[in-house]
Length: 153
Image (cartoon, rainbow, N blue to C red; front, top):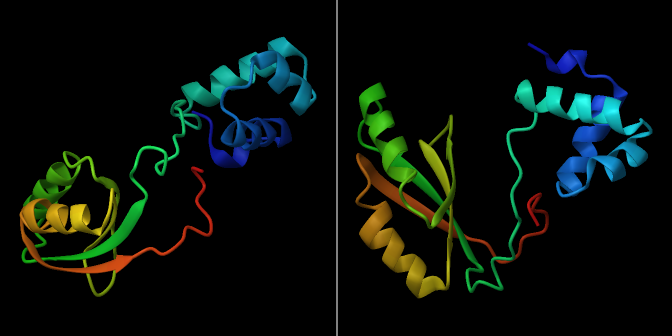
């Protein structure tokens, strides 16, 4: 199994370039990295096989889809046993409006990134879905006014 400290400059360059443009052909990627096509393709397959590259996807513009309202929600659970955490984690994965969910070490248990059409839609998701997730004790919302840096856009 390949470890991160075993990556050389070519591997790192491949990863950096693909993070910016995952649709590059192997031919174009090899030119940008400075390798011939076959060695570049071998490295690409090795990076995938070792889990450095976990997939490729389209990055869409949420505003074009009418989903440009972003809120971050602090969630404090009433129970933090492993069973309770697992139940919450499983339920969160089923809510399409929850774009990200992070377990936090601090004053609350989870931080959610929730994307909806507008504040009214967010309020409905909060009241009917997030508050009803297993073991939710209380929530606190922070509305994003502008995304200054977002790696996916």
